[in-house]
Length: 227
Image (cartoon, rainbow, N blue to C red; front, side):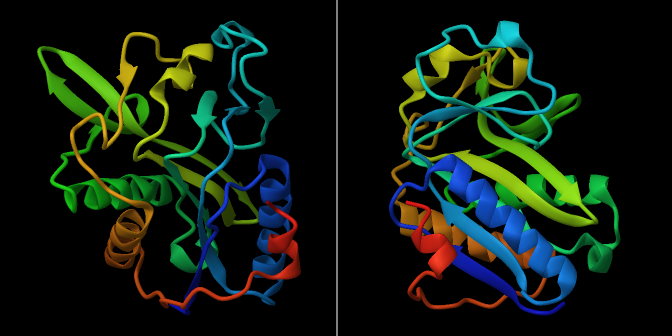
């Protein structure tokens, strides 16, 4: 595999400019003028509605901004304390297998959580990564929502590190009302953004292959306009 570029945004990034930046990068990857990219960031508090979102699952309209998005899935929350990983890979060079790609994203999150002593689990028929909290209770700790254009992926994953879990009250997350949401902090794990980013990068290398660790550099013009 060629190098995969990594970018990390410190300040929360507005949602619509982030999508525009992803769109531009996907086009460049397809054209062969830019390398694949993993972009780690946070958003300000907001909801996104995927292509399968149902209006009834927006239970508190007006609580937070809602953005319609082309990724798969239903309603989800983004906000400070949640690590979002936008993954732009050329899947033509990685087997052109969407199911395998999504399973790779799941494995990436599971291995990242394992670095903090947390067992993340898959659940048949449910997207994302789940925590067995005992007594028949399960909570979601990470969401997955992807889009693929001409076999180049974008959107990606969202891992709850220490977000305000009360912000989930305005939606039925991913259309699943019978289970809750959790975070590393709720599970008693203290983790800052740099330690989570290190774990994400290590796990990504194990799952998706060769990568390059680029030192933080001044953002491009397109990225500067995001915040």
